[in-house]
Image: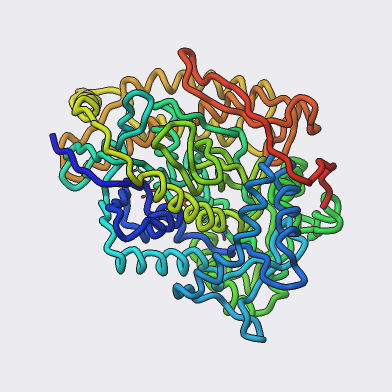
Length: 557
Ligand SMILES: Cc1cc2nc3c(=O)[nH]c(=O)nc-3n(C[C@H](O)[C@H](O)[C@H](O)COP(=O)(O)OP(=O)(O)OC[C@H]3O[C@@H](n4cnc5c(N)ncnc54)[C@H](O)[C@@H]3O)c2cc1C
């Protein structure tokens, strides 16, 4: 069996993974492993922008306050302060690296208003900000000559004596199982939006790194907090950026009313995402929706502004909803979008497992708490990608390579053979659809005990049936039937942690709204949820929230 060796192995070639790679010193032998070509990572789909307090009249402390408030006071305030304080220099660095930010009239980097923000501080490149960032980052990675294992699939971690010493991966084009030994492993594998049936996320966002870390014993934090974005298309969940509301778009119901005045009279459409999604869902549930949606009206922005600032979403609306927003409002509804939860990590990316680090959407630092502000996720990937890379650079210095037994890869070979050689059984796509439908219905914008209990039982049933998963394609080369089966197994594990956390948390906070416990309960629940694998499903524990100077208040927009 093949064994490769590097100083550092990074799994994930989105913004977080590539940013971490670029921070490792020139003498460090670093490899990046990605199941898709780097520029196909979901970071490239980010539309609306990236936050930083760049102007004198907008000190970074205001950004920190907005973020703490947006998190419904569950975010760790020390981590939030780091992110907001370091944001301006990171944005300037991105500009120097060639990111083509849109400009204001005075030629400075333009900034637009975004939800939950007290100042227009979201920098953008039209509505293709992720694309601009990701390509600039990839150019640097190529220039630096970082070894990239493209279309390699993370199968498991190599953990010996409680220390992470590498990974086992599947080389998708050849079907070979390979061990990559390293002094440190950084997971930057992105989010788990595809646990839900409709999601704004790319098909690749199946939370693989989180599931693999969880199975190896690294705790997942705050998994019950899933962000539903207020403006996704009904047919396929494709995102219509918050930037469209930042530019002045309004939300109307079937009677043509701007219903947000009832729910957030000051911020209106630019209240935080949890607030707007709940408002929309209430309008739809109470019969004031339009065919299961509400309407996003951009017509008053005018043709010129739409073409200049929002060209991509116009294109998406025409292609996938058959509506040109210059002429007619776009039907939208809340859709699964972002995972606030993830692998527990500190502000240098360290997880509780020695040798294992995490950054970007797969990690939970936690800067988003119970609800992320738009524009803070791209920022998290850059700030904490950089910090993780810098910390790991020191961590590996003078550290010997540990041994990694071939038994790890052998176990994966057995697991794959069992899947591929099974003559018949459950089809993955059917289980995936069943689970996604249950998650959409029972673990969505509004939750309650009965629905969550139902989801838990269905989740266990699907888990049991997945033991009999059947892969029809028996070949080794490019066996996407196999990789999809492996992704499904990850989704199933993560769904259990989301449901367990949501059932236990008997309060409403940020994106987690319980119809049977409608208020925030700081006395019992001002704490993070940790999930670890137990004998009978996830075993929950808790961790304290870290405070600096922001006292919890009732959240109003
Ligand atoms: C449509 C959309 C629009 C968004 N717009 C914005 C925005 O405007 N502003 C903002 O702040 N945030 C936005 N977000 C969120 C933000 O884009 C993401 O949170 C962020 O880009 C995640 O970056 P990442 O580097 O952590 O992961 P990703 O970019 O998702 O990259 C994950 C990487 O991990 C690799 N990987 C995963 N599993 C495996 C495996 N098993 N084996 C090998 N490799 C693996 C993938 O190949 C990929 O390279 C948006 C998200 C979406 C879906």
